[in-house]
Amino acid sequence: MPVLFMSGDDAAVAEVSSRLGRLESVVTKTSLGFHSAQTTTPALACERIYQGVMKAVAQRDQRRPYVLTAPITLDVSRKNYQPAEILSYLHTITRTDSHSIRFVGRNMKEVSDFIDFLDYYNPDAAP
Image (cartoon, rainbow, N blue to C red):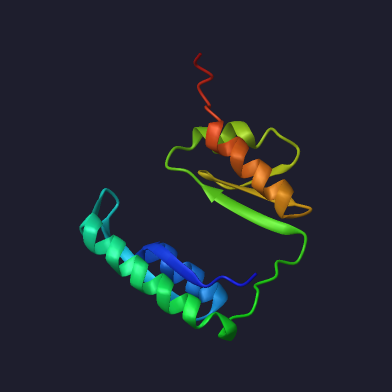
């Protein structure tokens, strides 16, 4: 199934568009710095997203599926260096810089499982 629509911050929309080509999208916030952003109101964002999705669905026959070829490489950077340091002890992880790691999965299911792990991973191991 092809990707029809994208919404998110300006960086996410730019990254997806660079990989998938021009597609219908809505920027809901624009980065102003590391801890600040200019956002639209929730009501305006919802309306723009709704209109964008409607337009994308109407033009769905013009899109083609994006196919990932295996193996799939996932690069992840964190604000703190500690997760990269600890995770690099796993034999399936390569540390690419002080704050970043690389995981190479055999397929999207494996990469998705690793992302799920990262979502719950807590380097301080506090109960």
